[in-house]
Image (cartoon, rainbow, N blue to C red; front, side, top):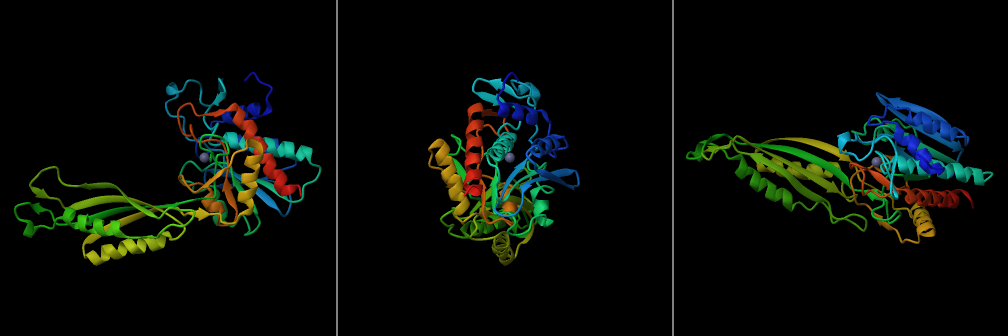
Length: 379
Ligand SMILES: [Zn+2]
């Protein structure tokens, strides 16, 4: 691209790697090389086909870790894009390309921020880490989750985790996240006995059984939420039954439900309450669970305040601290770090055709990240 703007050139290089999940490109090696010029040392940890990298500058406390992913979602049908998805393209105030917002833009800003920060400050006391995975957009099994499960980090080794996911809504810095709700899905089958509608005594109607059970499930009060989370919500997303004709009582009913839950409960408690009702009903059933994420919440104020104040310094915005949205790798880091905050670019175009970032937002985010570094390392 015809520019002499460092951050644009850096992002252009990152976008060029076709790093669809699991990222098998050389994107992480590129980042390693860039950081090594500022004396970062990089270690690679591979689980199956997923490469993860940990780059460290300095040593000891305080330790700030930037958490991110180099993988991106597939571009979809390339013909529907206005430009090549893996080639950064300028369009007015925006830079278009897969991963510009989610989240190579955030990674590039942090890379540039640390380079400038280290150049401008002779000595910092403590350490800076970039912990990047190639497996966030997929099942997220061999990425940050595995690093945490394999005890790559000691408890209290990381003082602050900054997840660089696109947390902002309309304007950069308007929303930061200090947690996320958990998510669990149940696939329930209620078995009846198929038969003729004219002889109900010889059949057992699974739709009738289900309606009674569902009413009871909907009545469960899992919790009242708290200051940070709304009450846990049980939502039925699918009900399927019937043979397609009007004179047959079907043999079973399939129901799918999802629960977004707060930190006032946990997935075992949720399962127990639901299974209790199913067992008491006396009906024959089968249930398969998919637990896709535990909730997390940062209650300590120090890092939240550092992030809020840094946003305020640069943008003059009063940040909203929220736990909305889907799940993120923050949930895994929260097991080894008490202060996890998500702060990054805006999320308006993520995963879409023509994903883009406002060029000026990159400068703003670099400045926010530099303020955070200053607040932590320059006393
Ligand atoms: Zn992401």
